[in-house]
Structure formats: C-alpha cells, structure tokens
Length: 105
Image (tube, rainbow, N blue to C red; front, side, top):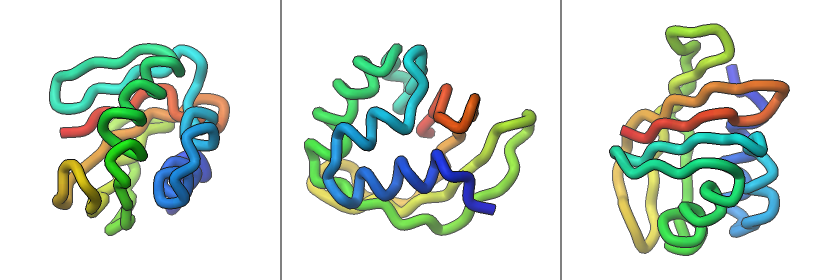
C-alpha cells in the first residue's frame, strides 16, 4: 500500500521541490506538527520552509498501514537532515488524491 499523495509528499521532500511538495496538499489542508498547527496550502508552505525542505529533510518510508478512518493512512517515516531526525508515525487523511490533513506525532 503506497498512496500516490504520500509518495508525492516524500519524493518532493527528497528532491527539495517546494512547489511539488505544496501541490501534494489540498487548498484547505491542515498540518499539525507536535501541536504546532498550519492551515491552508500557504500554511503548509510555511512549515515546509521552516521545518522540512528548508532543513534539507530526507524521508525514508518504513511502512504504511491503513488508518482508523476511510482514506486515512499511518506512515512510519525515518527523517534525517538539519532539523528533526528520527523515526515515527505521520497520519495522513487524503481527499481527491491529495493530502487533506497531516498529523506528525
């Protein structure tokens, strides 16, 4: 199981492509990074600039499982770069082939 939007999120990060990264989210996306909240595609761009591609993050997918709700997935990712480093879950909710929400915890 490897939903396209999650793959696009990972590939855009690893390629350092902020436009492709933002394009993997819906216009009204919600991102929660350990309690810090970002709303809309512009909010996702802000997070990307300060915490993701802006920190030269690199993702490796350890596994993806169906989440508790329809169109939800829990991806375990290993993150390396000049910011947070470690392995942990990210919960994605997809809508219309894009990421509608992402919770990092």
